[in-house]
Length: 195
Image 1: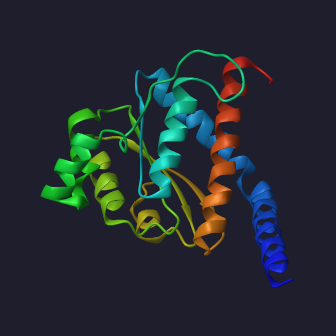
Image 2 (image 1 turned 90 degrees about the vertical axis):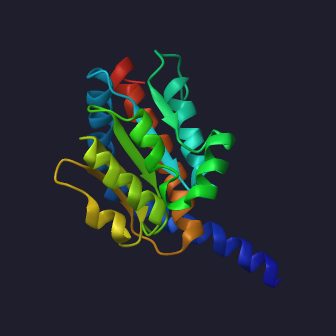
């Protein structure tokens, strides 16, 4: 009986946070979708970074951008910085705090946008990535939870921020997955005109 209560509680807690996010993030997601498309239309690309489960979410977001969410459309320029095991293993050996920053130095340019994904906004390598992106005159999109941590403190006025108001890492991750789906659906809607 205890297990079933626990299982039900997982779903209930997730649903509660998702309901909060539906109202809180609807307008910011629409703004972020427009910001991403503006970057792409200026010959920019979306570079995406995250750690652990967020590396998988970064890969998923890049895949949705390059291919599609639900409907066929033009490919959009996006690259996950979590994908190349050779680059990541060398950078991890030489300094894990720079594993994304070095890639941004190599690949990033003005009009590109950096998207960082984090449950708490305290990842040192993401903080370093944001600083490097700003040095390259890149706009930043932070997708965080809780207070947004140090990542939120680094954001400039023209940067974008989607923040899930939760502190439980699993619930925040679940909400971030839905946020990514909603964001990609909004991008598709802007491109295709009313899905």
